[in-house]
Amino acid sequence: MKKTNIYLITFLFLTIGIVVNSFSQTATYTVTKTTDPNPKLYNYNDSLCAPEMLNTLQWAERKSIDDGIPSTIVFAIPGTGTHIIYLEYEPPTIVKGNLTIDGTTQPGYQGQPLVLIDGQNKVERGLYFHDYSNYTVRGLGIQNCNRRGILFEYAYDILVEDNVITQINNTSPDYSATAIRILGNPKIGHTDAIIRNNYLGTNVNLDTTLGCDDAGILIGPDANNNLIFGNTIAYNHQAGIYINGAIQNKISQNLIFGQDTAIVLANGGNNNKMAPDSLQYNDSTQVLSGIAEPFDTIEVFGSTGTENANEYLASTQADEFGNWSL
Image 1 (tube, rainbow, N blue to C red):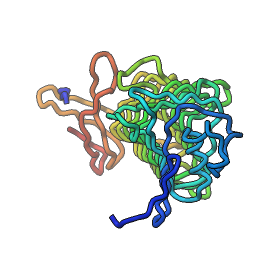
Image 2 (image 1 turned 120 degrees about the vertical axis):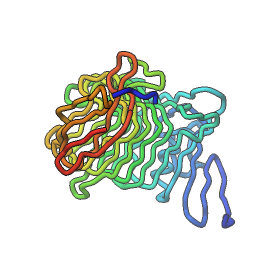
Image 3 (image 1 turned 180 degrees about the vertical axis):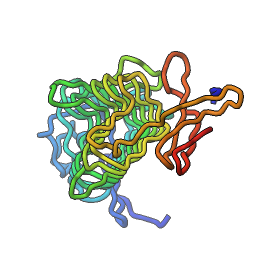
Image 4 (image 1 turned 90 degrees about the vertical axis):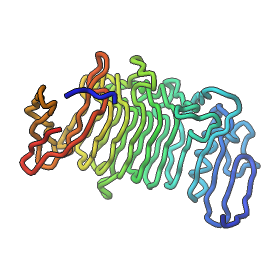
């Protein structure tokens, strides 16, 4: 196949970076600092909270957990360029739903993260969400954590987009080190996550030295019904995507290269879906054809340079007999 280069007026309460909409009961917390103070300095009552805690990421996370209403964390850190938040303490476990953490709000954002959470290899996770639903993480960089960049455990209705997550390190043979890990709740049976347009294990420059020790994405048991779309997953040390026992996961238009294995389906993951087979390319008609399971969607990738499958070309669907061509 020839490769193609292819208003309603509201009253607002505003103080110390907090905006509360009194009608719809939502809150916005603004991060203006890159420090990570001792958690003992936090108090939900800002008048009792240590000044050095106010307007930090940790403060915003803890306020969001305690407020009991839908919340958004935004960023307005002074200065230009990338702002690095060095984590000195394990981040709080986020145990409430309806929370958005939006790095694209940092002034100057133009498609690549300007807010970078750096675990300094001191903390296990960059962000940790446990239980509840409706979480969004957008436009952040996360690096140098032990075990997870972002962990969702028993959470569902998740959106993770436009992030760059790299150098997640494995400090124990008993754990896997992944950029994004989602663990499902057997009482719910689905996580309904959308993971799209992220760089996992590399950056926009396709740096080969930023891989995670294990996988880019790990989807665990009972974390069913997810969409993994349009991500660049590269140079992780084992797999690009690891599906462990979860089913109904659509993996589409991702660029996955530079790992030992692109996609692992373990313990019945995605019902052990068969990969397309018997590929044939007709030089005269420029038609690529093959066999798959009936009605499967087939995606075709090309390559640039020496990389493998790093350019999405086209999609087609197999017929009722499993035959396909494009």
